[in-house]
Length: 64
Image (cartoon, rainbow, N blue to C red; front, side, top):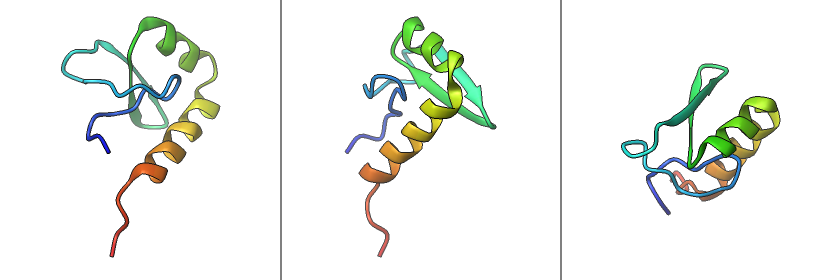
């Protein structure tokens, strides 16, 4: 598992310190690997945001 955010469009781990591509949706900031992924997210943020949350929950450690 990685502690880095996952690009909700392509699934690539992103380093927030290195990447300048971000977008906000429903009060949450999303990080992207490229301008192209960011632009795709901005065009349809709802579906991409849901995918990002599902990916995060699938890889999050179980809480005892």
